[in-house]
Image 1 (tube, rainbow, N blue to C red):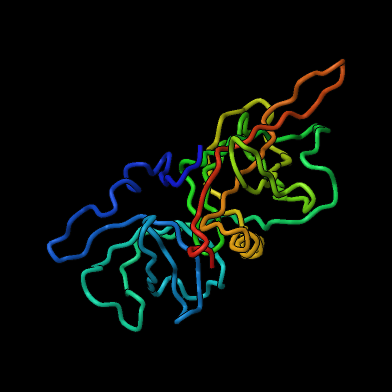
Image 2: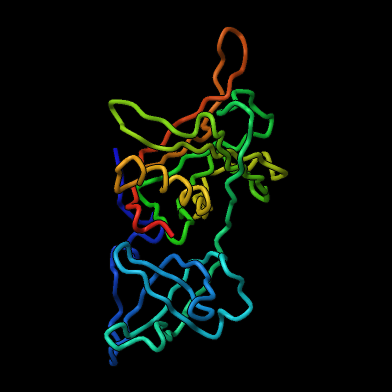
Length: 252
């Protein structure tokens, strides 16, 4: 199912309420994804799924272009922005872990499981593309207390593009995580927000879609979610997300 929806699991209420907590002034409270940019000045690009705004606050100093955050702030968007940037009152600023898309010549998806495979589920209906970064909620199954994960986000140029009568044209990427350390006796499902950096590839793919007369681009992810036994061998099993669509005019 092609998905343009954007929501959060833990922050569902905050994301659904595009403005909340009315103040005695005209300032409202917001919770957004954000990507740091240096144009027109050091600021944070945020979006409610419709409008993209540039916001600035002192706590942003020291950040680098492309850094990703979850930010809660108060602002009055009814007033004109100064030089295109709104000055806001920041409440919380949380870094978001970012993964770069890598090209590989290996066949994808890999079916050989690691002994430390971290199984995942991706929630596309809670995702949002912003400045080339796809913010997505990832459930890590049987997460061990104290563990770390090495994520790999990859594509093979020979197989990244797909086209079927049922789904139409789309691009497919593979996300995998290998667990390191952690307490084996304590396990739970942990939900985290990650940013998948697809920027350079999407710009290239957008040109291909434009040449084909399309106005939108669709993509999805495959992710490792369990091991199954086939003919006596352990095989890594992958699942596919729903498709996510974006207008070519919104790819920057």
